[in-house]
View 1 (tube, chains in turn orange, green):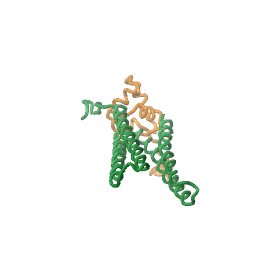
View 2 (cartoon, one colour):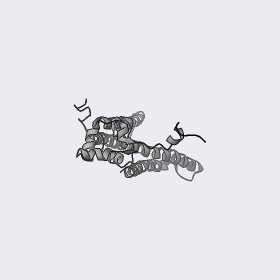
View 3 (cartoon, rainbow over the protein chains, first blue to last red):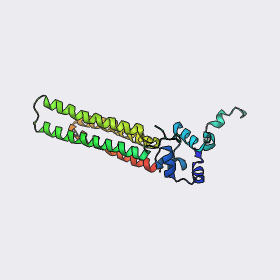
View 4 (spheres, each protein chain N blue to C red):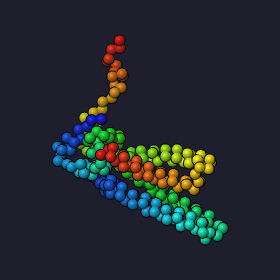
Length: 77
Length: 140
């Protein structure tokens, strides 16, 4: 799961610790999310979305490996 | 209670974790001390009939306190920390089951003494510490 957290945080001139405090999580969690090592659960994703006032889809980009198989527009040969 | 920007700010996650961890450590220490005192007392036959059972049940209460404080820590901690702890607990569970049953079979064969079960408990404690270290490295 890719995300724009680092860019959005930098735009606001916040440190990882600042963001962690605002989201009530540890700094390690912020670092793990930013580096893509950890995908946050729904409650935290919603808190991030509310903090940056952006929809979750604009914050996170999920490359679903099964998406191609379920794409109805894809022709079956 | 939440702050004006809708995000809880009264107690930051690391502060809350430290507080809960301190409780877990204190309960664990009390349990370990009670366990050592009671097992030593039973071995030396210091306790009369009835009191020995009461002492064992009293020790179990400290154990329950430890479990409850750890559960509270797990529920209130940051979600990544919880994931790391749960992964470490999976390792502990595996070692406890596999190690415990293997040790039991070996003791049935008379290869090891039944008292050596302490090694299995020690291995479980080490597995938890190792699991947490591995998890922290994986997500940092």
